[in-house]
Image 1 (cartoon, rainbow, N blue to C red):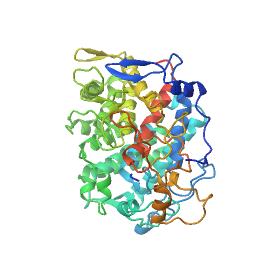
Image 2: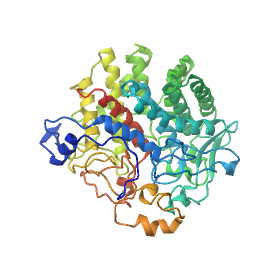
Image 3: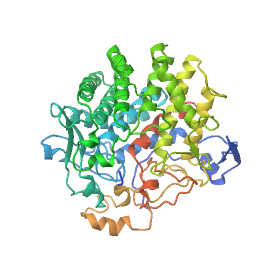
Image 4: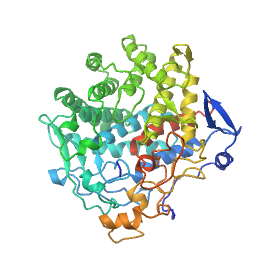
Amino acid sequence: MVSCSRMMIMSPSSSSSSWRALVLVAAAVLSFSGHVVVAAAAAGHPDYADALAKAILFFQGQRSGRLPPDQAVKWRSNSGLSDGSAANVDLTGGYYDGGDNVKFGFPMAFTTTMLSWGVVEYGGRMRGRVLRDARDAVRWAADYLLRAATATPGVLYVGVGDPDADHRCWERPEDMDTPRAVYSVSASSPGSDVAAETAAALAAASLALRAADPGYSRRLLAAARDVMAFAVRHQGKYSDHVGGDVGAYYASYSGYQDELLWGSAWLLWATRNASYLDYLASLGANDGVDMFSWDNKLAGARVLLSRRALVNGDRRLDAFRRQAEDFICRILPGSPSSTTQYTPGGMMYKSGHANLQYVTSASFLLTTFAKYMAVSNHTFSCQSLPVTTKTLRALARKQVDYILGANPQGMSYMVGYGARFPQRIHHRGASMPSVAAHPAHIGCQEGFSGYFNAGGANPNVHTGAVVGGPDQHDAFPDERGDYDRSEPTTYTNAALVGCLAYFAGNNRS
């Protein structure tokens, strides 16, 4: 969670020179719904296909476990090979959530759900190697979640690694010698939030991988059913029951009703079993929201259920469609009911901590709801403001373009994309020499003195990593110690993948 001078990575092709030049000249300034933005000159938009390939490649740099022969991110090596041994189970694999070396099940499951949703909705716009890499990214997480859900009957493993001990050290994943404690939920220590999110992830992954591997897809779906039943039967917040403060790092502040809705929505799609429709209709999760994240899933669940309302014409889900539209009205600039701040440069601003996670997740919902609207020729209004598919896509594109360099800094907030990007990201592995370059062990405190506090660029370019992003004034200091703005996370990238796939396949809308 909180936890590049020499390039040591095999990456996709570099960004188009025309876009790099476009960002550097910083072109014209125009007004977007009252906000001043740095706009692209008439030359067009970024190279979304290049950004997409890099956004997916990022996940290889976050891998835990034994790396495969085709691993492209060469500055990473095997790590966490004994994970799970403290509980006599195999919990190797999965992803480190950000710049640290802990595996948090709650955000990892959300990452998996969003990656899978992107593949399901936009896999048709991904070409060849990119689609294979996206599926591989889903499967790397799904393999771990499947083990976590099935290793011990009646138990769901939700984390590996003592987060407090980990955060007191600055170590490469390959060197970590902090306790690899194992955390779990069960009937006596429930966690409906993390269990329902894990069920959503397994169900979504089953859809994303169904065509490529039907047998594996069926295994994922069977596990999703069981974990969802567990979430419903044994209700409670995991952060109230999981020891070792692991829940404090990703506490479910929104409670667990949103995850029960989210999980049920995914099981409804994956199984077509009407019992999930009956259950989600009974939940009464009706709070108005203006953000979507690893914590609060209401907006995502409502957009997902709108698919069935708009694409399939199921009027029983119209209430969720209206709630999805209410969410959109709360984030659209110029909407009378907007509760969302925008920076002078036009970036959606929700939080001082890793703000771009909210930008990418909202942008994904905008493009996806627009897709459903287009299929059904649907429009709606935010009071006096008419809303069309073009409205939603324009805002989503603007946010994506901002991330990729169309901003007052003229900087891409995706590492390795464009002419200027963050050099000192808050990431243990990226900020220290690789095992190949420095085979000797680098200790806990040595990492702080020798690398964390160093002023230069990180030795490894973590290609595709999207950092937390600038503040409410569009400022970005590029400091390794500033984890709020300089740390990348898997869930920020996961939501961006679908957006980039959409725009890469449709540059004109």
